[in-house]
Image 1 (cartoon, rainbow, N blue to C red):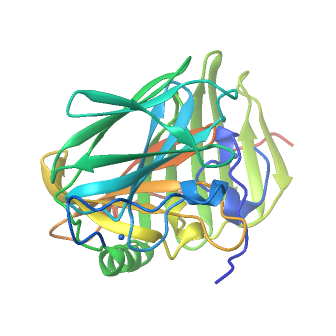
Image 2 (image 1 turned 180 degrees about the vertical axis):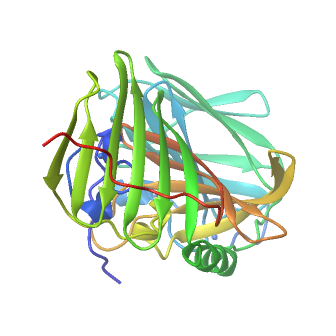
Length: 310
């Protein structure tokens, strides 16, 4: 299935709503002694497909998209997708159980190694000049999570209002959403705060000096969540259990790319085991590391037009 492409933009101001506002503000090896097949020299080899175990992290400012195939205890091929792509010849190592080995090229932005993995073990990817990304593997094979993600998305889409606290590559923002078309956003920059309010197609903006201005823009589609523009996610798996603010959650990994030219976008979702709501999501893409925490579900959140001098 080929989906409509949604640009992954670095602008924080529309990081959560860029796809709907369109405004530029922001796995089976049978034996542990089997030999994994040699990869084809294609960058697409570094991207996951259904049946794989995949997750993402970062080495400094470098995206490290990890794909484990077939994702079972024993011999696996470990692929990493790197963005930006290191210079030719730059070493990339994978370390498992204290043993490091050089990864080989499998195309632009792609490196691969054949390693033996244990259920629940860990590995690290060291990118020369950038740093290292560490990954905790789930129990292998990890259970599929597509139905769980679909169910959680349905629960979230039924909300009438909600609040988001966001960290976008170190810059902080908050959002209030009210169905069907109201959105309030505040972004904290080094030189102050900036507020933007959408009411229907009317956009109100408060600059750093406190002055409000108004304009006509694209009406926001509320509710909206970062991963929904990339559904159905590929290679979704249950990573395990955890907590978000003392609430038990199920942790899920998945990949957002589709079609002949997939975008390298990974997601991690923390899903409330009781309510089915997503309490936290992380998005990993080139130059785009976004961590959202959701709260204020169906709480009163009136969004009114500010007093703009005429």
